[in-house]
Each structure stands twice: as structure tokens, then as C-alpha cells.
Image: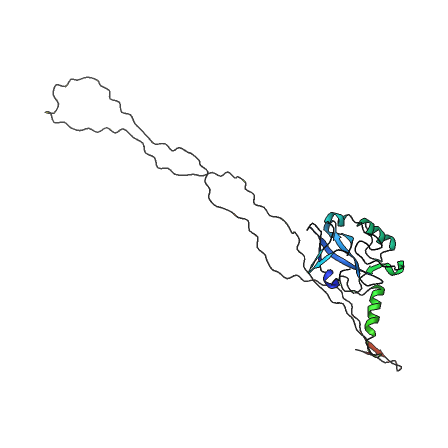
Length: 272
């Protein structure tokens, strides 16, 4: 059986054998008899609303990653078992059967001839999300700690907040082009030809032998007109970039702490 850092497990993220991220490790379950890690629960389902039990055998702990020997789909489809209480022998057997492991432990656990009462798995005392000490295991730990103390000494415990961060999708942005029509007016300089009569006196010696009669002379006139043609040209390139904004969020929660007071036969109570 591998040795696990239970504190690190409770802040770890579980990954499947295929490398897919499954979800956060929510609880760690210990064997009543050996105190070894036997099961972990992993948040699965939509928005992580379901806890799936997974045997710890064969899992590999790597910092804040717990790599399980099962795929994401196998873990998501695990039997639905209440994670807020002891595992009964029937529930353990159902889980081992689902994960194709022998209930006696041949799938990786050391074979033990323990009674059913000794074999139950319980949530790891002192290792829930808010460090609560619960159940018989916590009592055993507290009792073990007190064996090293004098008769006039006690250990005072308190809960402390452990705050973490998780990355989640907050929205999506996209670039979309659309066409608008607007009216443009452009002044274009144009030219045109006009007829102007210019009379030039002649010297009587220049033209001789003329006759009197009617005559018509035609002149072709030209003018410029504005014409419109359109072409499509690129005017600018627009990119969609992301930037990270740092801000501070405040979280709060209630924590419990033990207080110590002295009682004596004089009915005095002194708080420490």
C-alpha cells in the first residue's frame, strides 16, 4: 500500500489514467484498523455536485495531482454512495466489485483477515476541507497526543481557514463583423466646353473674291461628368486579446476554537 500525504491529498486535483482532469479530491477515507488511506472521493458531475468513491490502490500522488488508475468516465459512473458516513462492508464490496478488485484486497491491498467492524473505512479525522476533527479517529488521535502530556496539561485545538483558488470559465467574447451602409458626398472638379463668339476684324487685303451667302459651321462640345465606382480595400486589422486583471476578493467563514478555563473547589473559574 502506498503512503500518502493526506494534507496534500485534500488540496489535490484528480486526473484519470488517460490524462483527463476529473475534479477536486473532496474527502480521504482511512481504514479503521490500519489507518491507511483506502478511498478518496472526487468531485464529478455537472459543477462538481457529485462525489465519486475511488480506491486509493494504484493511485499516484504527484504534488497537487493525484493520478488514478481509472479513466474519467469510469470514475464518474461509480456507484452513488453517501460520502458523509462510514462505508458499510456491503458498500465497500460494491465499490471493489465495480472497480474490478477483490474485496479481500488482491487488487493491490495487503490481504488482511480483519473483522467487518475493523475493516470499515471512515473519513480521515482532521483532514476534511475545514480541518474538522470528527468521529472515533479524531478521539484516538487526541488520546494518543495526550499520552505524551503531564496530568496538568491539555492541548488546545482550533480551526483555521485554508483558502485556495480555482480557475473557472466566466464568459466568452468573440469578434463579429457586420455591414452598415452610410452616404458619402464627394466634390469632384469637372470641366466642360462652351461656345463663345469671337469677332476678329480682317484687313481687306487678306480675303478677296468672297461671295455673300448662308453657311453653317458645327463645333463639337465636350464636358466631363463625375462617375462612381467602388472598390473594397482593407483599412485596419483588429485583434482580440486577453489581459489578466488582479483584484482582491474577501472570503469569510466561521471557525471553532477550544477555550481553556480553570475550575477549582472555590467555584472560581479563570479563563486562559
